[in-house]
Image (tube, rainbow, N blue to C red):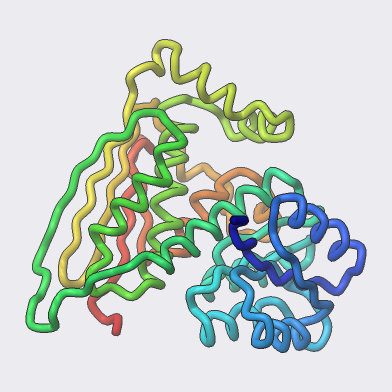
Length: 303
């Protein structure tokens, strides 16, 4: 019996983009429905009830930011990725702050598309997890966990899923979805750029050549990278979730990283994970050395 295909609503006012990107999505195994502007997007969204949405931010009648905000309000568990080009970068940042899962630059690169699809699938999987809430008469006061992760990229997703299940009791799914994005991206940064010492430029080149997996595996078996781990300390209280992620690399000058929210830097590969994480949580800070990042997500005032 064939597994049901996930349905994606793809929205862009350029027919060429719809055709080319739609073809890539179909090649990746998705059922694709397309719309040409924001108003049509919302009509289709309510009619076909897609699993995911990919939308351009600059469109006639209604822009992609507005589309993302309406979808977040009407169906908060449907992941949305926005497409941005030069001149509309600030709208992409606002879409992330409004709850979009990810963003893509124009022209869309296959490796970026695959990464965005992975993030959306992770968000979708989280939304469908079965949870068993505690009775209202029981209140969590504090809980702490400590884990160590070897330099195995394939283990990051299952680990974050398992960690979020620890947090899941009585927390809104949107909070868990935000933590999902932030923790995944920062652990990946800790492994790739921290423990394995791969530069952003080297990662970009490897992605374009399709050799990143091989490069990561080779680096993990060499000294001084062999045996390094990422430590994750997580603490949940009545008011917040605090996660501290520490790698064993040399650290980096985090305060010298170009502001990823600036229009000139948004479409750069540098700092993308930090941007996604930072827009998903209430606080993100690094230690002086740059090998330890702490995020805080407030939970006390959520319904």
